[in-house]
Image (cartoon, rainbow, N blue to C red; front, side, top):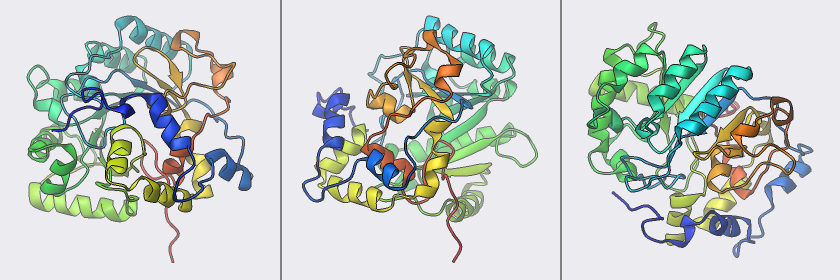
Length: 353
């Protein structure tokens, strides 16, 4: 298991250092800014189209230290959302017509108020998503979580970056794949991922290296076939997500000398058809301290909302935030390359030749 950047006292543990690297001119190629490409395609300014999802990152505490993690989460991190901030989130759901609460981390289940948040949001009739790393479900103190999630109708979105053990463990740590399969079987036993059960279990694929994901529908068919044949595991759907050049993945790209090439790939693969569906247009992100951001990636880079917008959950104003201008940077090319990338997977389906 790798160490967090913070634990290593690495330069890129600092969000400002990451932003400087991303926005600097590439020595290999003069890359355009994201806003420049939007302007060229007559797609600027980028604005929110509403708030369909309130995504809360409840902290950086995690039982794993995955090599691609854009949060730089890990067991030694201590940042965790307080009950006071969690209450402000629920207060917003009381007042605003936001259909979905999306809970992420770290391992969001390790936040002391995770279950309270689920109970409150589910009680308000909201769709609740738990972005789960799977292995937390067999950790001491969390073994009853599958039953809790099922009881409250929580949708599980689980990371499984490959259906092959070696590839998965390379990204997430030795033994993670086997534990993940065990936990998927437990979720299946409760109806999660089983057709007709109503209990949704989505899997998330991230490329291991500096490449775009393959076609989502083709990879989903392979996942479905291989997981069923090898382990008798079922799931609802697969989400393919591009690794953005942030935090540990950015550090790895620089250490291996692949940063310039990867950025050039993202820029070259910019697809204007994806812009309308990028997640920041319909999502609002909240960090563990209650600060507001356009998305979880902007949150990790500490790119605050546009000037004049409410900056904290306690200042929430739906009328202002629903049509806010979106703050962008070169990392946004990751969400608009190829078929696009969002928390729900690919943004557009590829053209059929």
